[in-house]
Amino acid sequence: MLHAVILAGGGGTRLWPLSRAHYPKQFLKLLGAHTLLQETLLRPGPLIPPDRVWIVTSKEQEFLVRSQLAALPQFPDTAAHILVEPLGRNTAAAIGLAAIHLLQRDPDAVMAVMPADHWIARPDVFVTLLAHAAHLAHTGVLVTLGIVPDRPETGYGYIRRGEPLALPLTLDGGQITAYRVERFVEKPTAQQAQEYLDSGAYYWNGGIFLWQASTILAEIATYMPALAQGLHEIAQSLADNTSTRTLEAVYQRLEPISIDYGVLEHSSRIVVLPADIGWSDLGEWTTIHRLLPRDERGNSLSENVIDIDSENSLVYGSGRTIATIGLKDTVVIDTDDALLICRRDRTQEVKTIVQHLRGAEVTQLHRTVHRPWGTYTVLEQGTHFKVKRLVVYPGAALSLQLHHHRSEHWVVVSGTAHVTKGEQEFILHANQSTYVPQGTKHRLANPGAEPLEIIEVQTGSYLGEDDIVRFADLYRRV
Image (cartoon, rainbow, N blue to C red; front, side, top):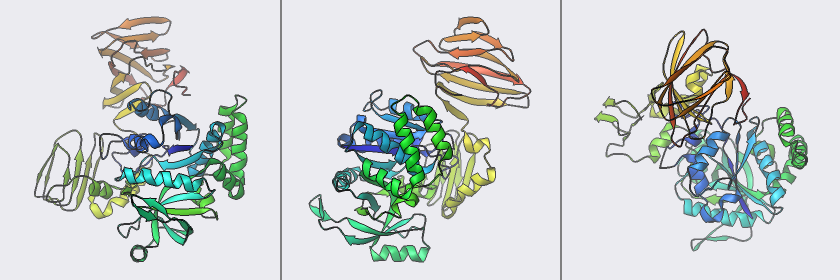
C-alpha cells in the first residue's frame, strides 16, 4: 500500500522574521486558509487515507504537529502516525526511521516522502503522478519527482536525466516518460542554470521521493552501513519496550546526512519522473511575492497597509498600520518584535541576518510563544520584571514546577483556574488572583470548557525561561 511520509522537523529561518526556529514556516499560513503542514497533509486526498500518513518531527515540535492535526476534521484523533526524533539528523535518518516503522505494519509498503513546507499549485496533477510513481516503485526502483523548471533558478539543485525507461506512462490523455538519473547537480551559476533550462534535460530536485520501504532500507545498508546498524537496533527495540531509550542512544551517534548525499547520488536504482506541478519550496520572500495575488502595480499588500505609488513590492504585517510611499522592488515584513526591510533581489541574504543575530531570542521565538498547554505573550519587561498573558487550553495544564530566581503573581482575566501552590489546591475565577513565592512548587490548570486567560507578573533577579525545575508534566518534557 502507498503511505505518505511527511518530514516536518525543520527549523527554517529564510522567511524570518515570520518564521522562527521554534515556529518555522511549515506551521504558518502563508498562501491560503491552511498552514503548509496542513496543505501537505490534505494534498494526497483519498489516494492516501489518514491512517497511512506518517509525520516525522522533533520532540520540540511534536505538540505543534498534534495541534495542527487536531484542527483538521479529515484527521480524527490518532489517525495519523507521529514519529518523534530525539535529535535532528537530516533526512536519511528520518526516512530510515519511518521505513522501519512502516515495515512493522505493511511489508509491501511504498513510501511517498515529501517535505512539510513546500507549495504545489497543481495538486491534482501531483496526486496522479504519485499514483504512477507508486507503480514504478513496486518494480524496485527509487523514484524522484523531477520538477520541470520554468526559469533559470540558481537556488536549487538539479537532476540530469539519462536514458528513458522502456514504458511511458499515461497522464491526462498524454504520455510521460520516466528516465534513469544520470547525475545530481549542485546549485549552478546563472549561465549554467540558463543552459540547463534551454536543454530540457534537467529538473529541479524537489525532495519528493517514492520507493518501497524495503528497497530504501536495502540501499541504506549498502551505502550507509552505520545508519543501517542503528536502524536495526531501533527496529529490534520496538518489540521489547526499550524503543525510547534505544532511539536516543542511536541518534546520539548518527552523523547528520541527507538521503540525497548518503544514498541517491550513489544508487543505480534511481529514476526521475518529470513533474510539472507548480512546485515551490517557498525558500525566500521573493517566492512568496511571486505566488501571492498582486495589484496592477505588482504589489502584494496585507490589509493593514496604506500605500501610495509603490511598485513590485511585498508588504506584510498582521498588527499595526503600515504606511508605504513610493517603494520599488522592496520587501517589508513586520512582526510584533522584528521588522525586515530589503530589496527583492537580496532576500536570499535574510539567512545572513539570522546568522549575525547568533541565536538571539528574536530568531528563536515569536512574541507569542506556543506551548503544549496553550500560549504566552510577553506584554512588557524590564530589568527585574516581566508581564505575560497566558492562555491555557481547556483540559490543559502547565507542569508542576518551581523557580529559583523569581516570584509570580497571577490574575485571572477569564475562565476557571485550578491552582496548585505548595500544599494548597484551590479554584480561581475572573478578577481573582494569587501570589506564588520564589522556590514554591506550583501548577496552573484549566478544568473548564473555555480557554483560561491569565495575566502573570514575574519579579526577581533572573526571568529567563530556563529557570524552571519540573516535577511532573503531562507532555513528557524534561
